[in-house]
Amino acid sequence: MFTTLVLICSLAITPDLRECNRNNAVHVVQVPEQYAVPGSCFMHGQAYVAGTSIGQQLAENESVKVLCIKGTTPTKNVG
Image (cartoon, rainbow, N blue to C red; front, side):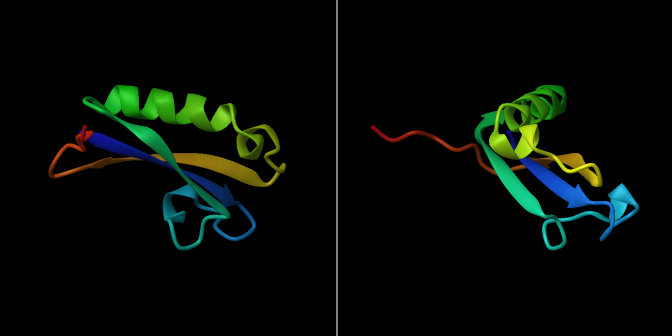
């Protein structure tokens, strides 16, 4: 399963988007769902952040980076 992290990065701080990470991002958003394939992870990550106030109010010098992190064990709901 893949966990989606969406990083909002300031191009003034990290002009090369490849260098943007959790430590230097302006905002880090974790999508509350997990996905079986990376394609779904990326698409849902972009859509999720686009529906938030953070995604709708991006500054001109900010960019979005979606990370899909493969987990070692899937998250299960208890109950």
